[in-house]
Image: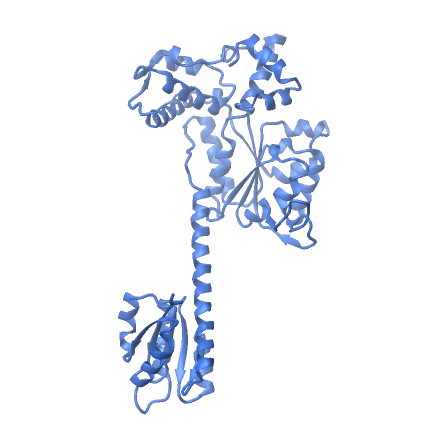
Length: 455
């Protein structure tokens, strides 16, 4: 038979100890001591869910002070453990005093077995519930650590990136809304995570949402949650991203891709600071720090009636522009060295180096895909290289990526090629999505990629 928990019985009357042990040993693991001074050492060797504690140990003294002393000790050092007091005198005032000091309940000598068992079971369940809650809190804490884990670093020391980090440090300590702008691959989410890490909300979670990937029909369910039965497949209640991020940071990536009707729904939630789950009428208050990001020109979108001006004002109290990699000078080599070590370790190719000519090639390249493209290029070079020294030919860079290209002198074909490269950078590995963004068929895109030598 499985025992349902450990009970410590403390009473100077050995006949009481024996009677309680016989009564309870069928259901629980029992430890009996007649000297309360042994409580400290017994607790060092055992984990108890419940203590049955006599209130009076010295003959002729009925004040209960000794019992209250040990009650205070147990609640201070083992707060999850329930304590049920034992008294033979039926002193209601004494019992109430014990309850005020943290006792779960009390029993009177002589006791009724059925009532005693019910009292003990109730106290035992209270302890188990406390332990479960604390365990869940611990798991939640570890989960937050896992979500907020710094597995990526902001690499570089150019004036451009240092200006960005200086701005990040200034705004992070506040709760102001931040809009991060910049080209694809510049590290906007990394900057958002740095803002969260340095904020007063860093002990809570940062929840990321790709606004461009949420469909019209799932928007409210994803962001605000839904109640059971709200729609056909809603078989249970679901918490939305706003609730998950409560007291933490909500990062809305690619916010420029949000359709005009959905912008209105988002604005209402941000203004009212409350959300209502789909299929429910109960408003839920939310407390989030909002960080958004986009590679689009939202001011131009406002002018073109594609983005709500009031939403733009709401999300960009502070705007941080991330410089493209081509404007960060020697940071290109610093990042290249970082990725070289990373992928050298991953693919068991230690002590790799990039020779001077290859470094010049990397510095001269335009990097339309920014840091993401640099990382991909380094990884590919590490995989394919047979030497410990990487040369210019080890880096397969797109022919239109030179920094000396004058945007004013671009021909129509050059512009078309740039647009295709940007779409492919934005949708890595997904030609269909890139074709959709360009407004052409997949086959047409393949034909143009072949024409321009894009792989």
